[in-house]
Amino acid sequence: MLLGGAWNQVKQYLLRETFVALAFCTEIIPDEESNISEEALAEISNLVADLRSSMEDANISPRLHELIDHHISLIERAIAEYPIAGAKALREAARTGLGELIEVREVLKEEKDTPSVNKLGTAWKRVNETADIALKAEKLSQLGQKAWAFLEDIL
Image 1: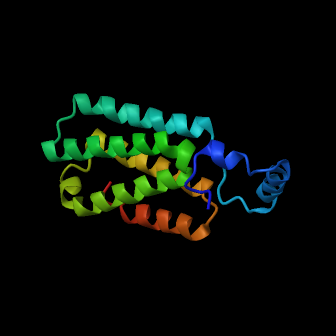
Image 2: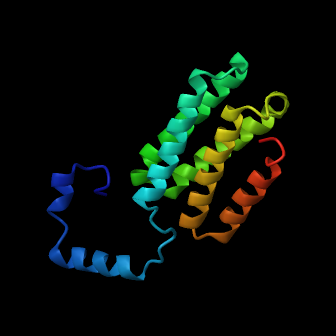
């Protein structure tokens, strides 16, 4: 078994024909997701930057401030992980964020009309839409849309 070996040890056993076969495999294996454009990722980054700047002068509770900071880091980490993990990084961040928002929905209802909460909702909706477009699995897409529709009245 060569899986635990260093690349130099494994490489000697891979023939040119192996790489040709792998190239054919890439053609016949279905693509599970579309690439997310740099513009879409930049738009999400801009929404997060706008949210971060709105936090500087925000008159919100410390708990909400902490929550929004955490959500900013979730989105930024998902964008950073996208080149490696794909759109699933965005979907996982959205699930984590959704769970936290459901847990603190009472806090959000109290401060629903603040610009920071509105911008947080806008950022998460865009993350979710982008992940849904990229992920071709319809059930994941439908789950994401239904979950965020549930939070519409909170955010």
